[in-house]
Length: 111
Length: 114
Image 1 (cartoon, rainbow over the protein chains, first blue to last red):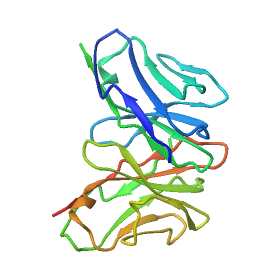
Image 2: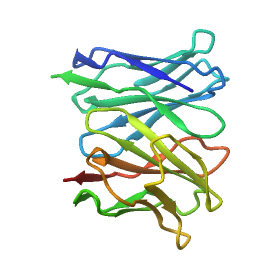
Image 3: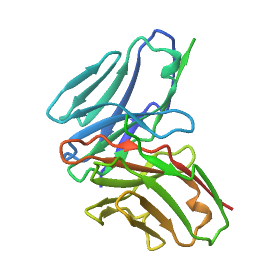
Image 4: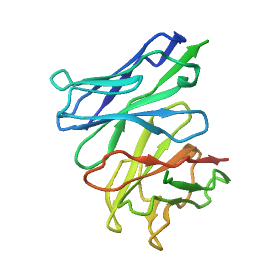
């Protein structure tokens, strides 16, 4: 079945620096790749997503890139702020809408 | 913004007892899901539900688990005889349909089995 690997497991950056989180997936049929932010005690919140027919998508300080050939996709957060501190999960999905999540990255933005 | 509502937020139960976790998906959504997250671990798929039946379930979703949409608004997850290892956060999610893959998750129910 599908497997999603996510790295790093923890990431500390200085406020204003960029953060990059990387994921790889195994199932070439996966065609949708969302990123979720989870704050303490809350459910995951969708922050950005990308479909397999697109290589890059940007929304203000957040961008996602997808390399279908290599089966990896990355989340880029620029100009990080303390409120970006959270756990970030990547996921891969195919037509069944079942998400396979990565193991999560705990991002700490140091003021 | 429409929300997925889950109740209770925290449930403590004795091992062997039955629990029902409740979810109210977004009203025009058609696909419903339960996921769980054991403390500090990744979010794992349990089951998907569409058109009043299970469309897919994981190995975790054994005979002790069942789902129901009893009244057209609520979506419930029942665990018949809870085990210690069922302790986790349980998240409900829904999506509108084919054109929209992005789940809306509820805020979760923390289940503690003692």
